[in-house]
Image (cartoon, rainbow, N blue to C red; front, side):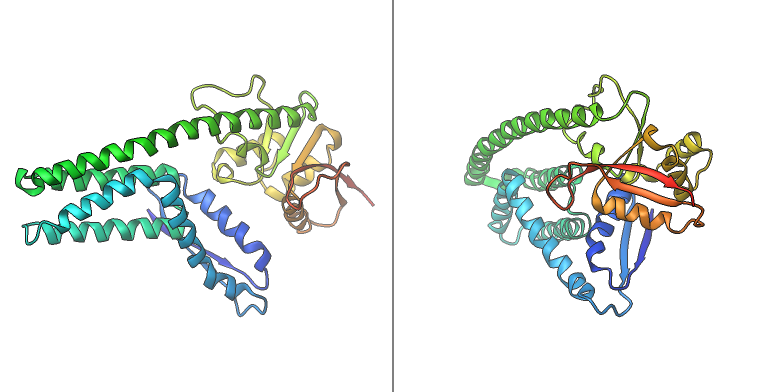
Amino acid sequence: MHFTVITPTYNRRQFLPEAVASVRATITAPLDIQFEHLILENASTDDTAAWLRTAAPAKLRALLHLLARDYFPLLLLLAVSWLLVARLGAEPGRSRFWAVQAGYVAVVLALGVGLKLPPRVALPLLDLWLLSNLAFLLSGPQLLGAKGRVLLLGALAVAVGPYCYKTLHRRTVLRAERHQNQATRAAYAAAVPPGALLVTDGVLPATYKAASPFRNPDAHPARVLLLAGWTTADPSQPAWRQQLTGTRAYAETMRRLLARGPAVRWLLTPTGAAVLKQQLRQLPPSATVQLQPEPPTPAGAEVPRFYRGGLETP
C-alpha cells in the first residue's frame, strides 16, 4: 500500500521537526506501508523553506554515520565482495551484479532519507544484500579462486571481532537503559494515585524501548491514555476514549477528563501541553481550561512534567 501525507504549514518552522517525526512514527510501524510526506510551506516568511532544503542532506549525513557506527562488519564484508567481483574481469553476470548493487544502494538511501533507516529494516536489508553477494560469488567455483577464498575468509574473521564487541556492548547498554527506564516508570507511577487515569503524550511508551518482549515489565499496569505516538492511530484508541468519557471526539474527551480534576493525572511535555490547549480552544467557550505545571518545574525545555488540570466555569 502506498499513500501520500500532506502537511500544510505557514510560518510554523518550530513545529516541523515534531510534525515530521510524528508522521514517521505513526506510519512506519507496518513494514508493508510505503508513503511520501509532502509539506506545503505556502510562501512562509520564516525559515521554513530553508529547513526543508536542509532536512534531506542532514538525514543523509545521519544515515552515513549510522551505517558506519552500527553496521561496520556487514559493510566490510560487502566491500570485500565488491573487490572480488571487480577482479573478475569480463565474467558473465558481472553487469547484473553491479545493477543489483545499485538497486540496494538506492533502497538504503531512500529508506535512510525518508525513514531514518529503522533497525528493524536496516539489519535484515543489509543481511539480504550480503547474502545475495555471497550467493553470486559462490555460484561457481571458478569465480573466487584460491586467493579469493582466502580474502573472503579473512574478511569474515576480521568482521567477527567488531561484531562480537558490538553485541556485548549493546547488551550492556540495553541492560542499563532497561534499569533506568524501570526507575523512571516507578517514579511516575508513585505520583499517580491507585485507580487514577494517567494521560500522557508519549513519555511512558519511550521507556519500554529496551524492555523484553517476552514478559510484562510492569507488575501493576496503570490505566493510561496516550496522546502521541503510533499507537494513537490504532482503532482501539477511539474506543478507549469512548469507554472513558462517553465520546470518541478527541477534544471533547480531553475536556471531560479535565473536568474530573485530581482523578486524572496529566504527564506532558511543554510542547504537548501547548498543543492540547490549542485543540481545546476549538471547543465552545463553556468553561476556561486550567492546565498548569505542578511545582517543582524540572530544568530543560522538553522535560516531561505533571500538570494540574481542571475546568473553571464562568
